Amino acid sequence: MDLFLQLAATGLVVGSLYVLCAIGWGLIYGTTLHFHVAHGAVFTLAAYYAYAGQKFLHLPLAIAVIGAILAAAISGMLIDLFIYQPLERRGAIRTTLFIASLGLLTLIENVLAIIFTPDPLRMDVGWLADSVQLGPIFLTRLHLVSVGTAIIGFLALMAFLKYSLWGQAIRAVSSSPEMARTVGIDLRRVHLLTYAVGSAISAPAGILLAMDVGAEPYRGTTFVLLASVAVIMGGIGSIPGAALGALFLALLENLGVWKIPSEWQSTISFGIFLIFIVVRPRGFFGRKIQSAEI
Amino acid sequence: MTAYLAHFLVMVAIYSILALSLNLLIGYSGIFSLAHAAIYGIGAYSSALAALKLGLGFWGGMVVAASVGAFASALVAIPSLRVAGDYYVVASFGLQVVVLAIFMNWTDLTNGHAGLPGIPRPSLFGWVIDEPYKYVFLAAGFAVATWAICWRLTNSAFGRVLQAIRDDEIAAQAMGKNVVLVKIVIACISSALGAMAGSLYAHYITYINPSSFSLHESIFIATLVILGGSERLSGPIVGAFLLLAIPELLKFMAIPDTIAAPMRQIIYGALLIVFMLVRPEGILGRARHGR
Image 1 (tube, rainbow over the protein chains, first blue to last red):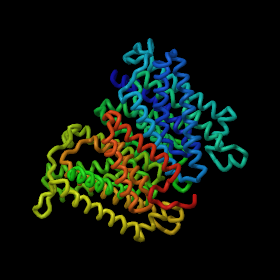
Image 2 (tube, chains in turn purple, brown):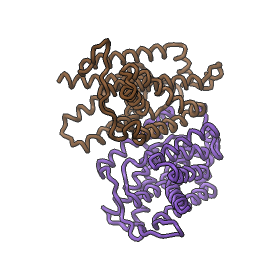
Image 3 (tube, rainbow over the protein chains, first blue to last red):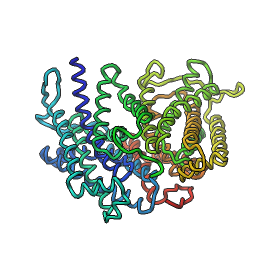
């Protein structure tokens, strides 16, 4: 039983990173319909921004983290501005956009691997690394921060989308781009805003991972594809769905370790994905993507 | 020098088969797969295992490889192609991850990271194909056969249905075509051909391990197709030739190994972006109008 609780707690901690990554990716996918795999590169960049801020600029941890989140948001906007928008202006099909995104992911990951070596680089987190005991469960303070960040990030994003004018514009574009354009919403600016918000919300996941196990150049790919699984499972266009999907995946992967050797973790997630799209292709609560609207 | 050139040509032939078969999906059906290296690996492993454990030899192994490859692909294609294209990207990535996990972790069968050594060379009517230059003919023969199969497929009524689905799925459906079935069939054919390339590779190198069949390899094969030009049959072959030449050229420059590997990936990634921005139809492609 203690093992079960420990695994559930670990699942929750990993899940909080998945949640941040998935809601950011899901916001971008639901709004722009870009299959933005380069989000994985933004996630990884955020980790290295924070690392570089702390090690090379000698910034205090909190400042380095905030700077890295801002830099990640700007990176996301630049990708949209200089890659996706020119492609869309030319009327490129969605596959073209996806391929460019894949190229960018490969490019950025490997540039990082050359600059920082492929080995994990750990950040100094000071007292956050201390362990805490909650009944039979052992975690570090950093793990609690991860869970807290995910909860705050999720609630902040929901509030932003619901109450702010910009958030409402994003929702309008997400539900119907044509309608949004007719009422005078500038799609390009809303896309840019979506990239900024989506990147900023996922950046803490990369940074928290760098604080916990180290920044690594090739982590982002797995994360972004798990995020896409979570988004499809939760229902495209639904932020709570994406969060729920991510949490579900993380818990299942970690509780699965109870009975199944850990090297099969990824097999569990994708096996579930395949079952899921047969049984319920529109996810927990969302709309189904149809190739016709692509 | 001849051996070096022969080796290069064998690899070009093997990658041409991979690119041609993947092009059936990317270019002719508009389905993007991230699992072609996994399919390639399934071909290599099942052919090697059939030869080592069942004593089936090269030709029997190739039949096993093609069947297992098509089966694995059907397993993913049947659930995901019923819905939309984006699902297939994710599902194919899933297949890639799961297959690689099997290669690495099912040690009783695949011998894990250590890989499978001692795969027999193929023989034809008692003539053992053991030198690289002899293998050039075998591999090139298979590449030509693959090209012929793809040519026949894409120029048939079936091929026109495929292209109709790629260009306008709803219209194809309205014409009474079974869109889902056509897509699943082409995914299986593409995988059977890709798995045969794996079989050729396993019996050529005689040793395989999981590292040759990673996600990077999948992206690389897709790059061959896209840069060569996905709407011409010869495009993928041109892509294979040019992109396999790049690492050979890098070898002549004094770049340390730790830099050379990511350097190669950077070049591929940059080429993908530049081509998408400047010439999305690839080197040999025709510009596509509409949408």
